[in-house]
Length: 524
Image 1 (tube, rainbow, N blue to C red):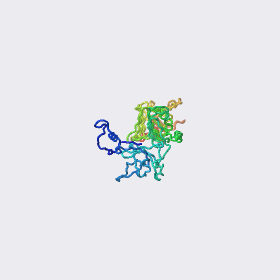
Image 2: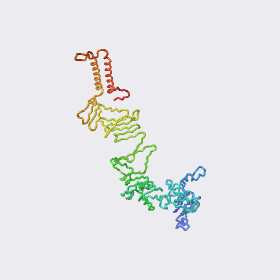
Image 3: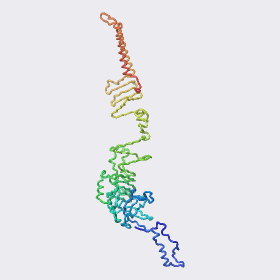
Image 4: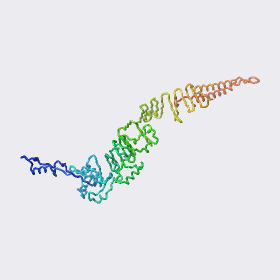
């Protein structure tokens, strides 16, 4: 294809000033034949004033994508990086059979779009401002992966011919297909099954949705054509492509490697069987089990791993109708500076390094640790009256060095059958009751100082009894009194030994019932 245009070189085509042609002679009347010829000649393009533009097919001999392939700058200042990405191209017609060391390099025409060819493909070459550019790869074989057919520009050295279809980092794949176009689509495709479709949900049945919604624009991005087909039962689709040459393929949100679908009103048949929790009651009850298949405006990301990262700032998330997460594995959160949760502005949970605080609207709270000195191993449970702690099925309280339970007025332990043990209250002691033993009634267990006084009185009674026995004046007999039993000093040691034995028993009873406090015993 070729055409004429004004020369891009402003120095060319300058004419000397002269009289402008006239349609009528000065004397009046029609112009002569000579005048007409001058007029026609003045309107015709000249070789110096105009340029002849032509687009010609050129064979790609090499693409400069290595620093070692760059030419050196003439001034010796290193490599000429302006040639990076350029292609060595031999034109099929005007440079046919020309030695390869005489051909030049051409740059991509557009600075913001560089569709780089591979060796053996063909590009359209055009000249502007005395410089050649290539536009795009020619679609010789209707393949998005490659259009390689080396040798159409003439003879090539044997060492280059031996490298045909052999590449260091590129392997031609005839199974990579063009994307299936729909009416009005704009499609950008790469060589390896990656694409961006700017379209709409205009065709019923496309992507598994049987409805027709022309006014529903979408942007479908995907990479990895059907690489997960086996996992989602799409082996038949892959086999059909292998059996049908050149057949295009549609995006598959499940079977493609990674996908981002942005839609306005399109049902997306996302398969979540392997990722959704087996028991997702909360997702069902709180989020109405909402799914991408319900359509509407949505953005769906699907891959084996999705990572959000901010180098300096934050990650913020907002949702009008709720936020739901579901997984068949674990859900973990690591936060070095703590984590805070709030429900309705009234109930809050603060997890800070060293402790957790759970606070409810009635100012009831559970504090586990606190992070301060001596507070990390303590648990505080507080509530406004009345307070209840209910442990279903079975409860176990254990403390390493001893436990303290302090309740104002009284404390009680009660089982689910009605037996109980009450400490304090109006009884000022310990009261126990066993269910089913009405004959026993409520038993009051005396303790503390009252029980000690009782034992003390018993000991005093033993001492008095000893004094009476050992000081009896005589033992009555049939013949009369026998005389004093303890008369004389011989009974004095026995009396003292009796008293010492009673005092020993008294001391042991006091130690058993009323041990004195020391610094190692916590006080209630």
